Length: 283
Image (tube, rainbow, N blue to C red):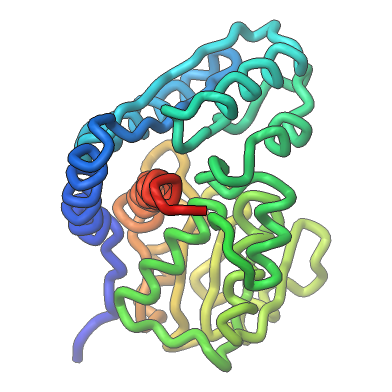
């Protein structure tokens, strides 16, 4: 008997990057300049700095430029808004990423929403979220958009299935639910105050774990044949699902690492390339 299908985000991301490198080369030939993703890091959080470096490395792999801006931990909201305004006005910058989380002294939502929607390649603005939710053109939040790419690549059926999203963050759980709803899934969103969570998860055909707690979703919560998407990553290379116990019950699952993480970065780069291509088209 064959085991569950492994939804390999690492290999898919590598394939996507090969295609993006060709698209970037065509942009360079047309305009004589290299597309730029600008990343803005506020503070000195080591994990955030690592993520910014990973995104810069991904840019270089496809031939793009990455412009990294760092502000001190005592930067104010006004400082961050000023930096975003400068990037919005810079025609060489096609995408802007404000690394989450920012220090508590910064109004993160105000800063996210200052990013021009045409350069919101990480899908963090309220306007972009609203457009995406309504099925209009917008760049989706990178992690859930990457998950959708992964599910589509492996032919995972979405329409008509019951999807349970565990987590309701504005950059993962909520946009994930809207993307699945737009693809005709029946969606239940769960969170820290959900009653009877294990029983709800047991009724799911597709489980997206995005709660931010290691091995929170237990193996016996998963019904036989369900699809597991583990969007978490924690020290010890574990996700939000107890995969050793849960994966054997599933029909398909994302490994940790190598599942959702690579697709997040690849999708961010893909949306930056798309922004650069759109900037070349006549308005």
